[in-house]
Picture 1 (cartoon, rainbow, N blue to C red):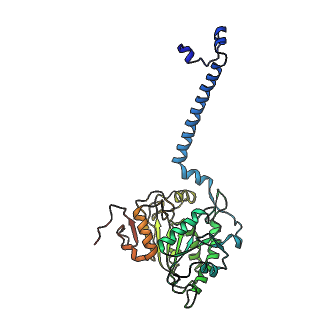
Picture 2 (cartoon, rainbow, N blue to C red):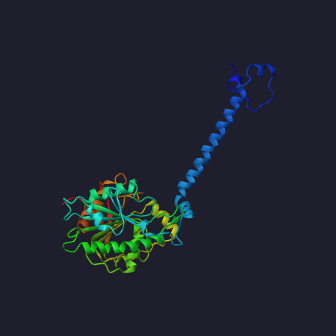
Picture 3 (cartoon, helix red, strand yellow):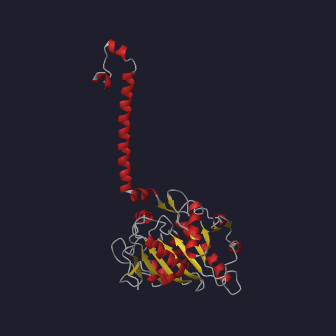
Amino acid sequence: MSSDDARPDCQFTALPRHAALRRPAAIPYECGMVRFLKYLALAFVAVGIASGYAWWNYDGIVAAILHPQTSAASTSDDSFSLVTADGHHFALSELDAAVASFPAADMPQKPLVLYVHGFGPEPDGDFGLYTMGELAKGAGADVIMFRWPSWISVTEFPVLNAKAASERLIPILDQIADRQAPGGTLAGRPLVIVAHSLAGEVFRHIGEADAALPKGLAARILFAVPETGLPGHRAWMEKLTFADEIFVFINKDDPALQVATTMFGEARLGRSLENLDGSAEPLAGNAAYIVLDPESWRHYFFVSGQRNEAIDEVFGEVLRRGGAALSNRYLHREPTGNVYTVTGPGTERPEG
């Protein structure tokens, strides 16, 4: 076979009659394949360029689409519920039934974790229930999720729904306080609150409401990368006097909070302790701030598969032991007295 036969001319010039007789269909077919492959290559190049741009400007693109909620969405009572780690739902008025659903054998003194989730369409889906299971194992506790309408659409950030959630959560906390009294169903059981991401906005409203919740109601609150504004947070956080201890976990590279920083145009508490102009923000005197260096991009840093060894140990110890865990080998205390940095495996402080 000649080289001309192997590589047909795809310009569709007139062919000699004997060539047309020899290869009546091969040349049009092969020419079509050449064009197809060229277009396919161009499509791959275009997709690559678009993907590269999206990766480089991800937070800007998302922030251009996403905007804070501007009008109240439907927040009927049935859009709120209490959920146990086995997926059962209870109305907000059914706290006793939710607590009674846990095995009774080891209930006295066993902690109760109240998990308040963040932004997302299915907080009680498989991943949410898995997260609750992780918290239950990590704390040796029973876990109840406070489920609230944290999703409106892909373009609307439910900040007003967070306020509505705070108004429903305060009575739940009151119910828990009542049942912690001697002889109550929660007597002797420490309450630990884990507030993830946009739940920070829920608790901001609770603090600003200055709710008359009794001291000692919660042993501790763990704010896991709280999605709420850094400026002025001290004022509302110091009003959360119903918690004996407060811990705020910071991830400087959290991708969700990067988007929120662009969207709101101000620093987010779960991402930074400095304002966008570089100025330090006054910190709450009743909180310990834990910076998750060298963690990089995990929004659910406390879930298996999304954490490193040091962060896993620190979060688990704080969950179980509170302030006693601040002496952990992986924590370095910064000159600012209530700020700690996770130092990471291999750079921990020597024991003893």
